[in-house]
Image (cartoon, rainbow, N blue to C red; front, side, top):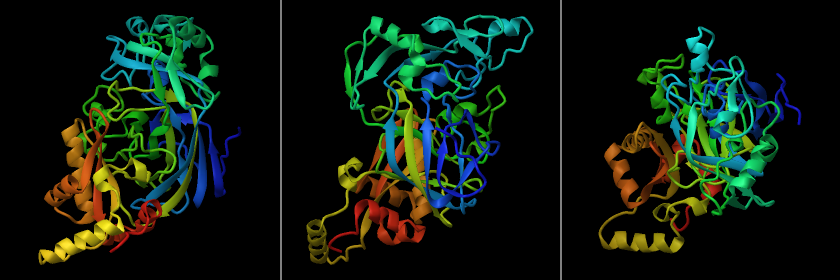
Length: 445
């Protein structure tokens, strides 16, 4: 499939080129028209990049696309129309950094210690594969093993034709898949990563799982160059004071857009609203998962190649620090689901009986927050909601407790703050049409 790269605005832009760094230095494709569609052909996110030390990030994501009319201080609504899995197999597991093979952060700054000791260039070494297993990743200059991560306990998973079920396979089958890894994983020819199935891990065998495909990294580029896996407040915290070229201060990290979310509700049928922190917004995608449990307890999950189609809509004047998510109705926690006419009628009667006037209609929203640990992520989400809706942080906390919820997107620090927000405040943000399109007009008020 050809990449569409043009300065003429298009209603449909196809992207099949990739980067590891997101920010102002990126080449931007497109532009795509306001109301147009972007079709991303993504490659697997975490482990493939993690075992490819020439990549300066734990993700390999698409190049960004410029959105016509999006300026700094606006936002872009991404209507996720479809996500189609292209991989037939993948591998994942728990990890640890390999001492001596990275500087500060194995996701960002892999090195070849042999070349360093010999006085040769040693940062981000180019590598090749020699066989299968963790010893297969070799430095092109000196042929040493240079994989910066050890998969402590891992598995290889195969998928059925419908991509609805996955099963972790035996050691022998994992080795067969490893020998033809790019084909099994559907890795595009323009990608740079090694296929993670090369590791041939089979510590967990015969375990089945349901697939529910979602995008772990989707949204707009930050206003400072950041490794794509670190465009968030938890992994991004690893950059503060680091000893490599992508080190940031706490103030610089505020330029992130927080779109590395790892939230399973970022799936077909969702609407994701992201900030424009550079002109054109720069919409990109990657790190698609066949399935992911809340919290992503193992830190990594089933990364797959995918075709992601989003429709873009510019929201003028909506200045966000991080994303707002409008997930499918069935993904909302019980307390946050829109009230029925019957519930509103009962509440009005109860309010009158108690000499009280019921406040106006409310509708669900999710404000996303991140930080180096869960409590910091919650504080970030509460602060963002407070600023957006003109509420005190205490009001946000009270509303989030009796008619809301905190959900853990990812450990160590990414959360979804669910609120039933007053409709008039949602309207003031300019997104009432999106919320009503997702959840309907409030009933019974």
